[in-house]
Image (cartoon, rainbow, N blue to C red; front, side, top):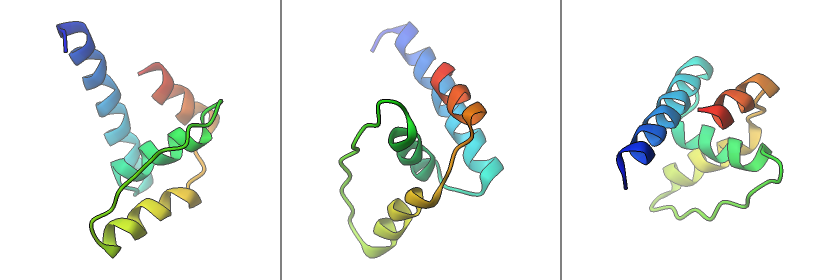
Amino acid sequence: MDRIARKATGYRLQAVRKLAKETGHTPNQIVLAWMLQNAPAALPLVAVSDSVQLEENLGALDIRLSSKQLDDLNLA
């Protein structure tokens, strides 16, 4: 990964972590919700290693990101 791609990834990761902290969700839940609510919606393929991780991932289905939150993530 080149320097520019690493920098862009860092900005996006910061945006995800900030939104997770503000909303009380995990970063993984924010990413899954973002993927599901973006247009066109992406179908994330996820694997889980235990029931706790499964519950966390399923929690993303209940998250409704605002237009501003989606824009913030898309522009990060």
